[in-house]
Image (cartoon, rainbow, N blue to C red):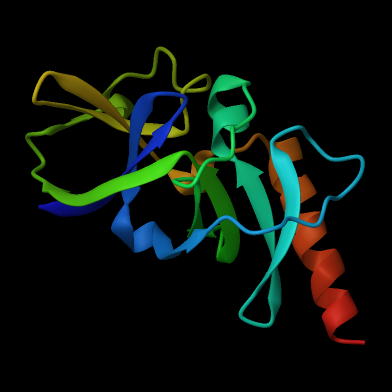
Length: 158
């Protein structure tokens, strides 16, 4: 059994392994960063560090999030760093067996296009896409996020 956090993005149920998450926050004011990808919304202060904020609606569906009272930020572990993922709402934390997780890694056909999709779960008449946080971004996207993290880490150490 693997524990997953289930959240909503663009009216779709998405899940990620609970081990890839640290905390769930209410969305607060974001400091914008100019000249970044559309899905990078900016940064927030988090536990004496600066956390880059990624709009999961924009990243996965090319549509910007609409802020509501339910909008949350999932603090996630990514490439041994922390990033914030804006989601429409966090629904639950659930255990899923290996039999429920229909892995997309079994097929090489669309591996490049769907490298962020880890598995699909079918339950109660709905389909949940399970994402792999470490594989959410292209090489350019990874370099962009790492650059933001590094820039703010240098500022903190001055």
